[in-house]
Amino acid sequence: MNPAAAQRHALVLFSGGQDSTACLAWALERYERVETVGFDYGQRHRIELACRQVVRRQLAASFPRWAARLGDDHLLDLTTLAKLGETALTAERAIEWQANGLPSTFVPGRNLLFLTFAATLAYRRGVQVLVGGMCETDYSGYPDCRDNTLKALQVALSLGLDAPMTVETPLMWLDKAQTWALTEALGGQALTDLVVEHTHTCYRGERGLRHDWGHGCGHCPACLLRARGHAAWRAAA
Ligand code: ZN
Image: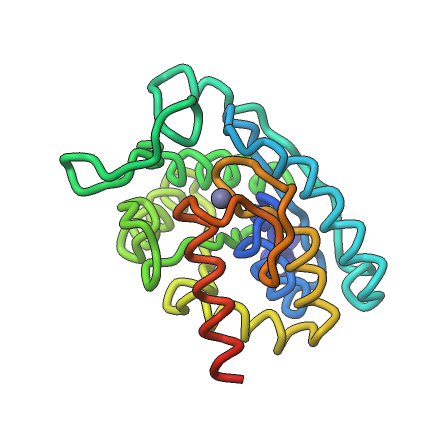
């Protein structure tokens, strides 16, 4: 593939959650060909892996212009991550603040590993753009979501692969209310409805309760962020 074509193709880190679904829609608007990659890292909320496929199918069914651009999906096995240390995302542990100022849901190096594996896959697929939903505006303080971390990783990946690798993070400076607004701007009510109904955010993996912002326990940090962002967006609309 020639270099210009490689820049028109993107690989989206797609978990099946609200943020990565917004990123996928964003990428489908901009790139001619968009592939997706997900990771099985022993997450407690592995129900999101099933949601990924539902969201992809729904996006293709509801948005024909995007269906033509949506390429292959890849699922990588990173279950080693869960074996390396107990966190509240990968083990039955309380979700709480730790002495180091980070929540117990922090999986050290998770996004560094995800992006590095994604870059390896992208290289093989002739893709030079990675898209991730990392955000430091309205987040849990994870240091591997910060803009500087990702800029440094972009440089390291490009040097280590000896090929340009761009890391796009369209949500970096958006709060959750603005992410809802971006979703609406990209795909209107149909995309907002799709995100509410089919994406998964809850750390506890609960799908049972249906709130106006979607499914989830309603109490974990991920649900609270999603719910508060939705309420702020609705209030501003
Ligand atoms: Zn929850």
